[in-house]
Structures are given as C-alpha cells and as structure tokens.
Length: 367
Picture 1 (cartoon, one colour):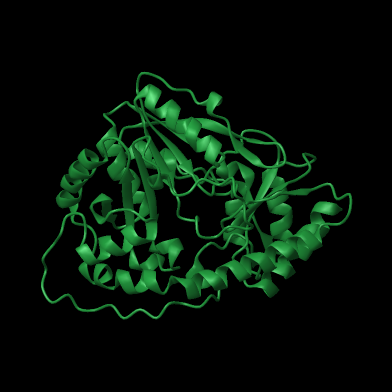
Picture 2: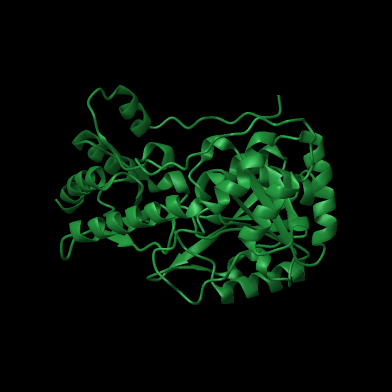
C-alpha cells in the first residue's frame, strides 16, 4: 500500500486518554462547541438534482461578492482541504514541490503526500511580529506553488502588502502559483493598513484564495468551501478545475442553495467571535505578571495565540504539567516550530472558562 502515515504517539496524548477528572480545554477550535450564536439555517430540499460542476450560480455569485471578484472565477468545494487537494492535482505532477509555511497547522504534510507532492517548509521570522522572508524560499525546478496562510494558524500573522508583492514577483520568476489560505481573514485583532487584501484582489500573479463556511460563518458541519482564482492564466485554471470538480461533484445541493443567505447573515456570528477573542486576549494579557519568564507572541488575527515559555522543560513536559494542573494546551512541536519552546492556545473558549484556565497556566509558567 502506498499511503502509510504513522500516528506519532506522545506522552501528552497518553496522559489525556488516562485522565478521568475535568480540565479546562484551551485547545478548543470548534465554533459549534464554544457557546457562540449559531446561525439559524434551514436546509432546503433540492427540487431536482441538476449539478453544476463549479457550483450553483447563486452560490458562486455569493462567494464572488464576498471576495469582490467575478463569479466565473469561483469553484465550490466540500472543504478547504478538498480545495488544496484539487489545486495540487491542477498544478503538480507526482514528485513536484509546494512551499509551505513553518510553523503552521499540521495539515500540509498529509495533503501533499496524498497527492504524491513534496511539501518544502519555509520559516516565518519573529522579531516582535511575524514576517515572511521571501529570500528564505527554496525554489527548485520542481516548485509549482507557494502556500501562504493569512492570518496564519497558529501565528495569526497576516500577509503584508510588501510581502505579497515580493511573493508575486518570485512566483512569476519561477513559474509558480500563489495559494492563499484565508479562512481566518475576517477576524483581525486590530487594524493594520499594511495588510494585503485577499490574494485574488490582485492581478499580477496566478493566485488562488481558499476559504469556507467553517470559519466564515461558524458552520463546519455544512461542508462548503471554495477556491477563488485570479491573475494570468486564471481562466484556463478555472476551466481545468471545473473538470476536476465535475469528476467528484462533492458539494451537496441543499447547502449551495442556502449559501447566499448564510453569507449575507454571517455578521452576527463574526461580531460575537470578535468580541470573544478581544475579551480573551485581554484576559491573557492581564494574567501575565510583570517580568514573567513567559511571553505572548502577539497574534494579528485568527483564533489562536502562541506563548514563548522557558526552556527549563520541554514543550511536552510543560503540557503534561499543565494537564496535571487541569489545563490542556498544544505543545509547539504540534505546529512544527523549528526552535525555541512554545505553547499554543485557542482564544475561542467561553471567557469564564478561558480565564479559569489562564490563571492556572500563569501560575504554573511563572513558578
């Protein structure tokens, strides 16, 4: 068999499986379990099955309006992960390479391997904020795309206009596409005029933006994502993506029918999330004592926060100590931090629960 992903067993996972007493879960990232207002969605019965490979026109128009582009540049998918898979099928042959950020959510290794594509990491640089260093990108003759996540998960860093322009120039020089994962783009922590807009709002490089209802509207259970395309060659790319989409026809008709109404009403959910994130960020900042041996690597957006912690213990040892005290966090190695010692928290839990967990975390890290 070709695919053999070995699941990495670790002491933190074993300790969590053995634990019988309650704990504060600061890894929660599912909006349907975070006490947030759920959009009232009544899925209509599809009157007839008349599949459109790229998606129903009404749904494509709603997504296009969200991005500010033409509907003929939109292809619907069942998820962002499926969107990645289709783009790797479109852009790559077996053995080709895709450049992916590090640290980042531990997904790219699986998605690329399933398409027989090699993921080549490039580092993000921290100097008080996160930066994408275009000079660190390792292009080769087999590089077919550069993936950016804006804002990053877990870094929360948005792609800046200067960075995007440099990436576009580098991609054009090496004949590559730019793939921009923008699932958390609607959740900034503060205003910043330097931020790039959605990648498909520019026309200087072949670009694909990925997003979906999972984060945009807090409805991961409805399974609707999309690919938006722009730049030189976008028309041909969409034509070929349509063939891939027609091969799978993976998006259910009912969710496509209701997608325009969901996107039109997303503001209620998003306002509640932004309020929640602001409260929890303030709680985290207030819980850190002066001259504490740990620090918050300030995120610019998204649902997560990264802590830099003392190297007196390994990340796994910190995780085990915190779990014993009643708090679950992610160790940094889960996100492939190349150096240092880090913990990753979700800002999504209800404020009272989050505050309870942060008090314990601060006590343990500051001891």
